Length: 360
Picture 1 (cartoon, rainbow, N blue to C red):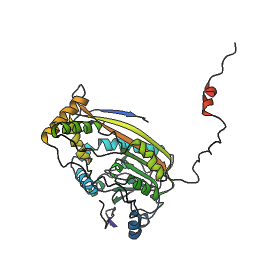
Picture 2: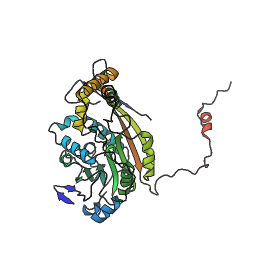
Picture 3: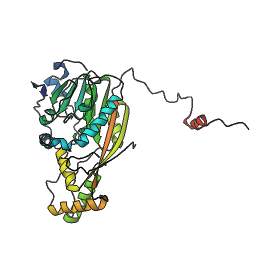
């Protein structure tokens, strides 16, 4: 661990396999929702031997879907852009919604961790009355150099797939739009559960399976027509039906999962791709196709506008955001009643809420 300018660098000896967009004032957004800790700096980290041994116990059958080195380069490039703030509209919006969920919990968190913090998209919406000390962790050094917050922070350069912290360290762990690039998501949830203190809470947001379905369909249809087949050009995402099960298997209880659909309107498909690149959200799946032919791209843009275009000529891009809350068990938490202990049936609720009839 190197402590340089309040940035801790975790070095690993082993490898790992609608907001207004600034450049278009007319861009619009449609939002719909409702589907469905104090320790010393040295003690906060695992020792090198324990660190390596803990993470070598990951399940051998976890799928290696994403090129993590490619994703690190993409994020580092995006964070180094001089005008990179204009691509932060989605992350800032989702970060504010994660912060709102933190404020919903009526307590002060002595020590918190933000996994995949980026440009402090969550921390900018928090205050020191709620969070006394915050660890910001990201895989890219350029992101950690960006904005300052009013909360005392320590910045950690580390991979989201390998949390370099001791057991029972944090009172709160948050994450926004980062976990969907992790190869072993069940293992990541187990690590988050491991570093939380008993009665600690995890609040996260990640993109869901319906994200960018317009772009995905347009590219597939164009490639099928022009090249006789298609390859995946949009990375696979987690389905909301799986999220609760994964959190439960990791040991969390009192789970909450909800969905927001955010639609951002762009002039065309190429502007969608440009903004995804500026966000550091380009495809990094191992089976990605290195490039698309120019005529295929033009055909995809035409299909996109024909199938999904609005009357004003703009096209939507849908981002399905999955929000999750899970608690690490503690004896003080409310327990569910034993099965069969109820003294009233749900079938009787209708009779209870009916107003009494007037006597004739």
